[in-house]
Image 1 (cartoon, rainbow, N blue to C red):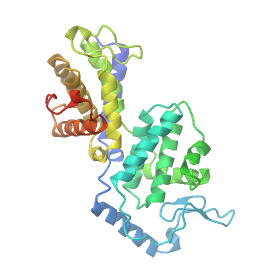
Image 2: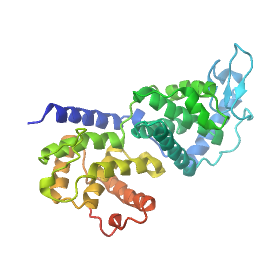
Image 3: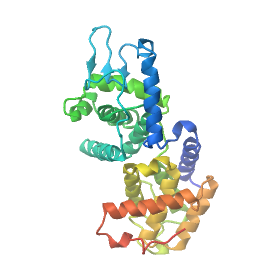
Image 4: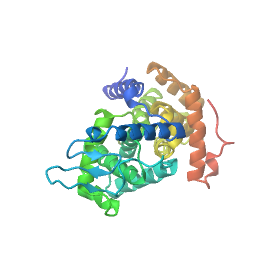
Length: 328
């Protein structure tokens, strides 16, 4: 019989599954040249309509970097730029990689939950899929997204001035406040995205309970996964969460469902720690109850990519080599 704790985790998984299948919680391949060119053309058409399409007072124009304040009558800008945008600015995955690394530095610096980076990266990806940006605006949107994620999801709050101070003087708290409104409107106030780490943290305790774990871990996460089955189980949860963090850094995962990344990370963890087949079969039974499947093509592709980025992150760890890993 399921406990109240595992029932709670099951409810969360079902909610995540529903969310990730909604258009408002999906992401696009916005770095493709076709997508970027379409955003640029849309901005050109908007500019050609004249000042009637300009944002209202006290809103950040996401294309000219301006913060209009009619009360003062003097706009300020992050970086001066012409009204009409230049040709597509070659926004690339390397920008995103660096920004995600910076976000992890921020949450570690302020001792915050690293899961906030996944949430803020969803905010940023959704915004960038809808707006033409250049490098300076990219930085502003990134800073605002981590500030918003902390504001909404963290019990420990960080001041907007503290976030602005990381911008090397180019971005002020006023810019972040203005961009926050644009970000909220662009997200249509959908601020609770499902994440791979969220799936992992809710699937793992159920898995531990069903495998008859003698210890669910001090935090109730099932960190002592079924020692009676043999194998090194103590690090599976943390290993899978680490893989989910690596996935946030890698742009190719933008199009993948968070559940697929989570399932792939758990499967890779089972392989890495040489857990017996019972673990995978029990996981598959749990997934089926939640309309998920560890044998989908997307999960398999995610697992392959996780192996690749893990080897890049940990090149001296022969244990995680391609040859030593199993398959679904």
